[in-house]
Image 1 (cartoon, helix red, strand yellow):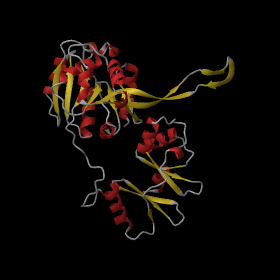
Image 2: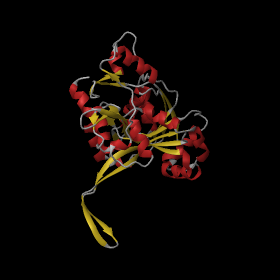
Image 3: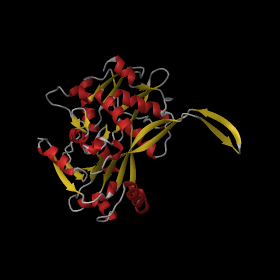
Image 4: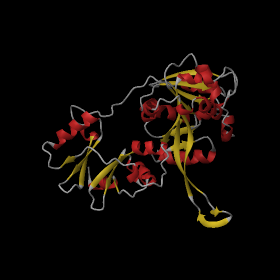
Length: 360
């Protein structure tokens, strides 16, 4: 690993969790290395460590020292056959990075599993996985927020680059090992079906037609006899970056009936906020930044969810979440996500998303 890349992966114990998240996004890696004032390696911090901390109530302003791992697997630069030993450790412990330290404990290099991809015996710590689990795309709405465009085209077929939104969404899922898609269609459904009838795609598409508008969740009842595995539901106007396989594994590991993918957003309040104490001014917080996790419109469900949806009944997703929370509070989880998330369902966001994705 070159020195500049290594430097970008180093943080101090005082680095906030929010700053660590930003660094993970910038480096496009899943790990950071925590060093002390003498640049000695004292711990590691992964996206999984942060995610577990957040669902336990960790504040993003907290220092990384509160969630970093003090015990880690590393090697000395004096280790005989260091490349072979790193390879062995990666295979044994299913890890992707091995830090290398000198005699003073200073991190001087990192061996990555991708370094071995050119070898004839390719190391695959995280192999590409093929999932049989279906991805349900809610593609039946009228898309009124995108009027007047959606008076001509259904929202799923609005272009994003050289492909419509919905095909961009499916391509991303396919790249993550998901190849079975179910499209719930209604508004201008014949146009959507006609578009895909002329396409040769590497994944399967099944169309399920709503006879009426059953809301953002009600149409799922039509799938009751079709789905026997955990499944993903997503809107047809959002692009979510990141590892979809990670979303799925998180859902399974936590044994949820429903997992909501929540994306981190920093909201700037454009005013001076008055902080009061017993009616007296405590301080004025000028244009504070709020860290929140918002609903991305991507969900993972167990088939048992169909027991909470009635046939031919209008039901929006927020009502379904409320019902599940009321009956199975400990099985409704959130996957904290801090990669890119693009809401293409309204014009301002569509333009921003188009610009952002063109630079990816």
